[in-house]
Length: 262
Image 1 (tube, rainbow, N blue to C red):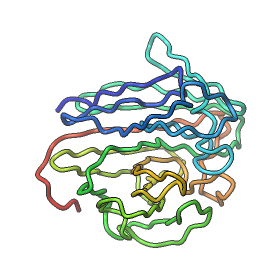
Image 2 (image 1 turned 90 degrees about the horizontal axis):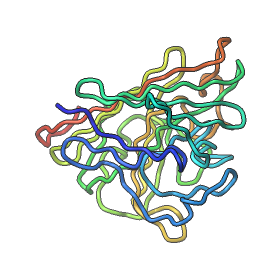
Image 3 (image 1 turned 90 degrees about the vertical axis):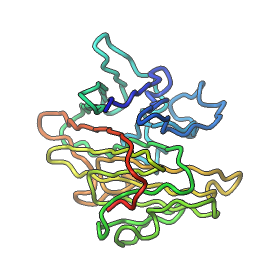
C-alpha cells in the first residue's frame, strides 16, 4: 500500500490542494477568485481542499487566522505560519503506507485554541462515514452556535443526493473512515493531554442561503466545539507550561469491498 500523496500551497494559507490515495483524488475544490488575494481579516474564501483552521473553526475570525496568511516552507519540508498570538508548524511526510502530518503550536502557557484539518471531500452520493455506532455526538444546526447531544450515526453517516439540508457535528472519536465505493480513506488524530474529536460537515446543498452548494467535511480536530468562544472546560486545547502543543494527523487509504463499515 502506497502512502497518500499530499500537495500544499504555503503561499495561500497552507491549504492542502491535493490528497491523492487509493487511485483517486479525495479533495473537493471550487472556483473562488478571491482566494489568491486574501489578507488577514478578509471574510473566509472557500476554495475547498483542506484548510488549517486555528485557533477556531466557526466564530471570529471565521475558519481561524492561519488560512489567510502566507506560510513558509523550509528545506526539511517544515511549513509554518506566524499568527498574532501563536506560531504553527507542520511537517508532512510519508511513513510506510501512510502519510503523517506532525504539528506544533507555540504560544504563551494557558493559551486556548481549536484546530481542525478542515478537509472537504469529493464524495459520491452513495458514500458513507464510518464511526462506531453509539459514539457521543454534539449536533449543530446549520449556522447555529448551540448544539444538542445525540449518538452516532444520527442520520449523518450516509450522504445521499442533495436534499437542501446542512448540518454540522463534532464526534467524540479520534479516528474516522470514509467509504466511497471501493476506496477507503482513514484519518486519525492524536495529541497527548489534549481533547481530540472529528467534525463532520454534511452540506447537501443547504448552505449558504444564497447560492448554496454541496460540500462534505470530515475534519480531525483538537477540541470538541466549532467555536472557541463557546468552549467550556475541556472543550479546547490548552498550551502547557512548556509553551508548545504537539499533535499528529495520520492519513491512510486503500481499496476494499463496498460493504457496511462497523
